[in-house]
Image 1 (cartoon, one colour):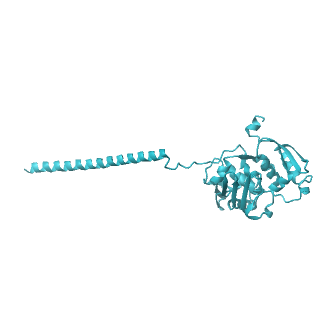
Image 2: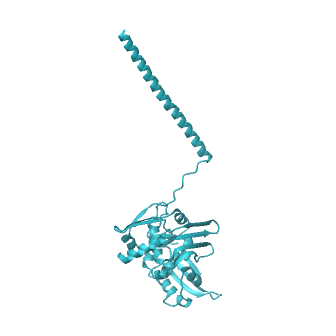
Image 3: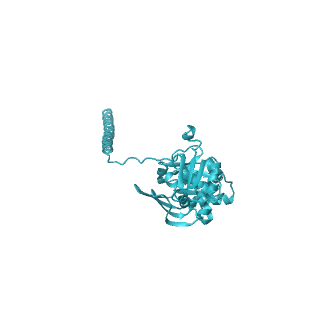
Length: 316
């Protein structure tokens, strides 16, 4: 009798266990069916365009060897001016000098050609990187890339320049598409003890650098000794190599030059000194200054192609 009772008890336990397993399997089956339904619903929403697409990751473009770049819309403006650091002003919603196709309003400490040199190296370091990505650099190596030695004074000058590039607000209006507001450097941090700094670039700057660019030859840049030579390198790098011309009055206005016209055109000074330097380093094949029929002073130049560009290699 006891054996029969024991067998019956085992049979009941076995039945309960099987029933429990069945319930667990049924639960998983129901969940899988529910997940499959959810997946089908999500696919339908995606097909219907109800879910927003994943954001496109925009990277800095790759640059030619030993070159940096600026958006072409910037190089013929007074964003970076032909002025010494001691004359820098703090501007508030200042409309910068430019051609009629673009309007730039600037708030922050005025930027000069040393700041431009720093920013060109920032852009070179950022090539291939994504918006907001933290980029690490050593201040000594950074200065060496600019052709400048280390030391406290130069470290301080670099630090101040980076703060200026970070602490500005730029509003660029394109009369066809609207406007964008941004800072040249999005984020900046530094560690004075180890001399390593970090920066990132925002997506608006990267988008501008992904359109029309003016490439700046850095080997030539390091050979230039005057701010005006560097400004002219920027200005003349826009567009294709070959012959171009501009009114001298426009060059003075756009570069932020405050000297008198006679001093700007004086032999061995101002414009002629800068053009001679650009010709001596191989950036220009030739130049000439003359008056047009209206009495305006005109400078005409013939620019050579960057030595690492396809145009130079093919002889075009």
